[in-house]
Image (cartoon, rainbow, N blue to C red; front, side, top):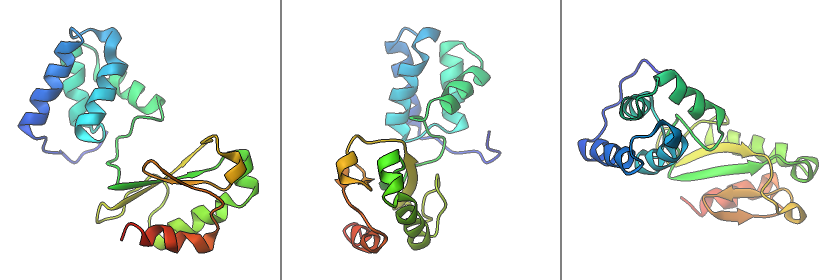
Length: 160
């Protein structure tokens, strides 16, 4: 886990403790609690995992194991506009890797990172189920189909 301590807002900590109580502080509800916690904080830093572990009376290692196992959970804050490039078979064979490379070049961040201004984060996913529109890019909940490397600039301009 990270060595940098993150300062959590007291009202968010209280909300998290309430979430744990709403699930009767049951260890079997860990995944549900983590989903709610990520909704509160936007991600799951070590400090949040420690609170969940304490409230549910499970080890921090168990919480960390669940957070790192499920791809839905993130320990890195997402950008205001999370960008996901589909790397499923149809998208990949139609040039998704070149689209991804262009996003990395334009944003100057690797996959899994967030731009320094917190505006964009960049990730890949397996399949969004829109194979006929390959290659597909999602920005938040908005889907872009048949994206080419040249189209990356236009997509980013929408969020400037």
